[in-house]
Length: 175
Image (cartoon, rainbow, N blue to C red):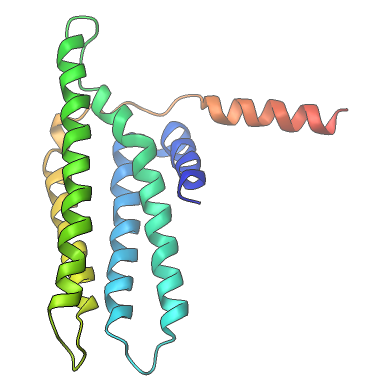
């Protein structure tokens, strides 16, 4: 589903909001989902953990999909081609390395936080693991927002994805 939401994020960015605004809004949706998951992990008796967790995971998928669809294009817009081709290559290499380091740290640190720390009367502490992830999301969104003036803010134009989909739909119904 995450990659389906990336298509919708691309449509929103290319047709309506632009890449920067789409990343901001989808980042906030991701943050909302992460906060919901943190809240659900506290295991309140009055909540249906399955329903709240589903809502949180859905928001995380929507937000991630929207951000994924724009992050490379938004970063690529920062460079003038062909003069800065080598800088563009370095940017994408560094972006890849940072993302992979973040994945490795997340996959190793967060399980340790939830299993090796006891809290709220349990032998594990899922709220701590989810809370750290939520805090890091807040931090990332703040850093992204602070760099607002550094990004290229192109106005949305015709969306190629919508044009292709409309051609397919017209062809299906005109058979």
